[in-house]
Length: 128
View (cartoon, rainbow, N blue to C red):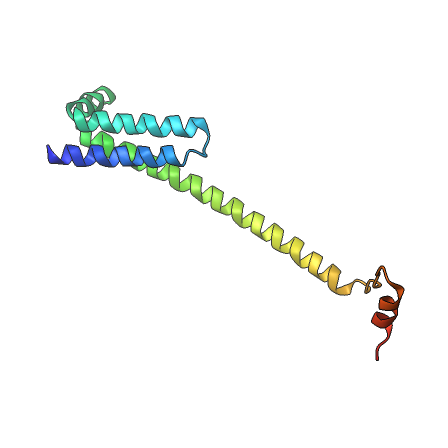
């Protein structure tokens, strides 16, 4: 009974964190809350996972949970890997553009000093 309380508290904490950081798409939020609800049902009524597992042709509910978890983890890994590669491309592009801009600034002719008072312009152009 204590493990159920701990697991439900953990699921509720995850839900609260998702709620606080809800800067994601509504589809993502709904998906997370559906998964948290399914996890809550599995914690409160563990026989349900066994019935669902038998429906899908898996021997035990624990095995079904493990299979689904592995597929979900692989999906998340591929998703974040693709995001990482995209960010690398963006950083590379920005670095190239920055290098080109720096080179252009270093090789550009100096701009004349323009002031509102002509005596300051004469002092700025006088090397002594």
